[in-house]
Image 1: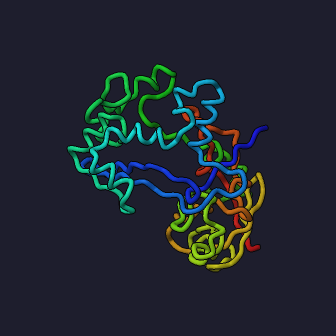
Image 2: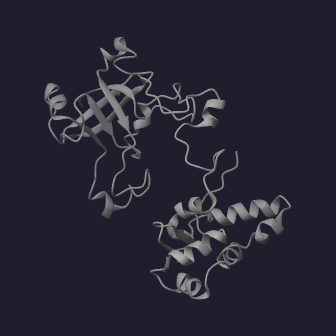
Image 3: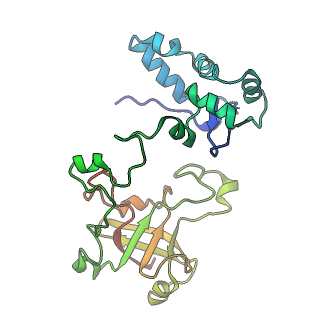
Length: 274
């Protein structure tokens, strides 16, 4: 295998467009805060250099990332371009300029659909998808009981009576990133499982207790967060923690037939004091 280590957000510069709403957006040049560590390189440099190595340098700006941004930014008004590069707050762009940026291919957002339609057979929003029907699926969303649930697998639910969901966002982290930043970790220091007070009381669990969440695949240790955010009978495990990997509880055999997405939000588990 070949590993191409990518730099972090703080180790790479970037020209970024934030579409915002239909009437304004932002363009900003994000400066590099520090040099990449070790052999890490910004993603864009890796992509462009691969193109050059494949003999397509003329299609990849000959490996020059700044040149690629300059070409893209040609669609911007000179004043907007200068402010985007030189003002730390970036440049706020309003409706008229956004139309020009969309036309130039620089900015993508909801306005592009107003201008060019949607990528469907009709060019319109389709509530009943012809493409899905042609592929043998239902054109409209239809509820199907998960492959693992108290209804689908009642015998399994006797040992694992709680429905497990995962993937909720945490304010201080981005998936598995920032868990090593002490100032952020201080706000949310423990991997948590959220559960309803009735479920916690039935298991002798109090808020803050360390518990073990078990599924047919394994067991992981979390700190209990007891409140009525969760529906009774359902628990939620936050993800992204190195020492509490919720994916040790999930499974990958029952996939969504359309997207192939695994059942991260519809499984069975049990929770007990650790």
